[in-house]
Image 1 (cartoon, rainbow, N blue to C red):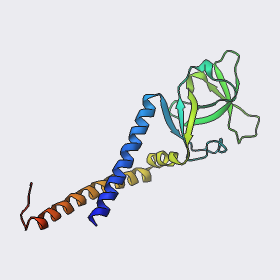
Image 2 (cartoon, rainbow, N blue to C red):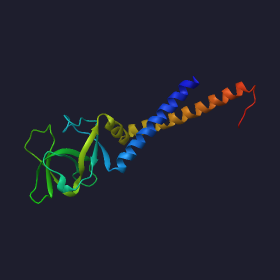
Image 3 (spheres, rainbow, N blue to C red):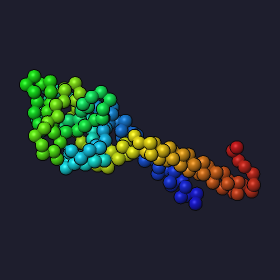
Length: 172
């Protein structure tokens, strides 16, 4: 039992630490993650993917590139393919790959967050879940679970110490 608790505790802690380190390193190099919540680009970036966006000079964006942007301040982030750029470079006209309509989204260059560099399927679900009330509750339960596992590991260690020392507690 003690071994199982120890393995579970170390595995969960290790996974959280490695994930945090990877995200921190990517952010240090300018890659910002965003969750894909719509299916407008589902052939390349399915719902639940995590796209990593690199801020680049606007003049390096060309038709065919996939960009992430906001439409209004406070609105969510959208990711679509650039179809056309205005002559003065102030607007990018985008459309999702699965959208067959002739309607394009006009995106002001100020609202472009950057080009999509790469994506990780399914990892966006964690972010989407964390943004919801249920997700926050799950994260809280996960954190409490880690604390319980850690406490259980310590208690089992102390009990083992007591039983091997003939009833005296060492180191408390």
